[in-house]
Amino acid sequence: MENINEEHNDKKEKKKSELWEWTKALIIAFLIAVVIRYFLFTPIVVDGDSMMPTLENGDRMIVNKFGYMVGEPNRFDIVVFHAPEGKDYIKRVIGLPGEHIEYRNDQLYINGEPIEEPYLDKYKSQLPSGNLTQDFTMQDIPNIDPNIEVIPEGYVFVMGDNRRGSKDSRHIGLVSIDEIIGSTNLIFWPINEIRFVE
Image (cartoon, rainbow, N blue to C red; front, side, top):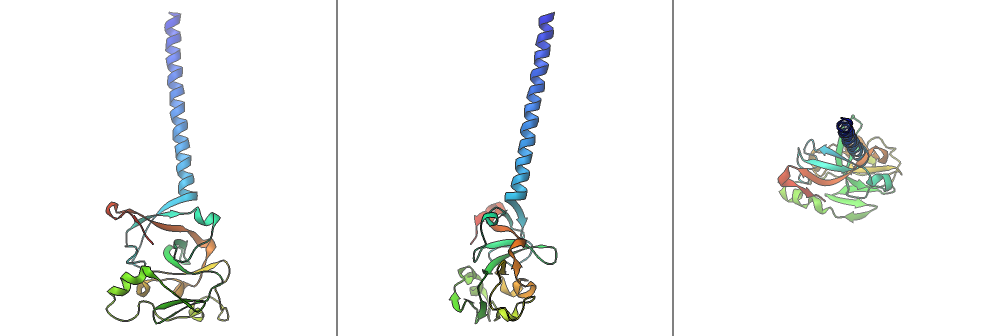
């Protein structure tokens, strides 16, 4: 009888131990998922047409939050940031700190030098007429001192690829690097559209 009780107790202990191991594994998995979601990567849904044709309305992307914890944005990165309206915007970095930016005749100039934007070629070829990007200079950027000649430290100038239909730094002003959530270049949904974008 004593052996039966011992076996019964051993089985109970084994089940308790197994249940505890599963519980620990699930808690650890949950904590890892939370860390990844809030500190490293997060999904975002593209809302609107401001990044067409590069990104379509409804595309689902992964935002890399970690990259800017250790580095700075680069020109032409696609970034997600907190906009003044309390929404998150997705745009492309065009101008960096210390740079003078302007557009003339549909051409980007950084510090007076013409800069190619190959990601716009597809869009420009579809235009029935006129320029994709209207002319502007640093003095046209809202919310900055008109005497400022270059983008100040800690800020970037961003634009959507759909220049005629994008609310960006031409309207909201420069974007603080502190407001940038992260960069993104991976579309993971819809499944038949999985790809990296430039």
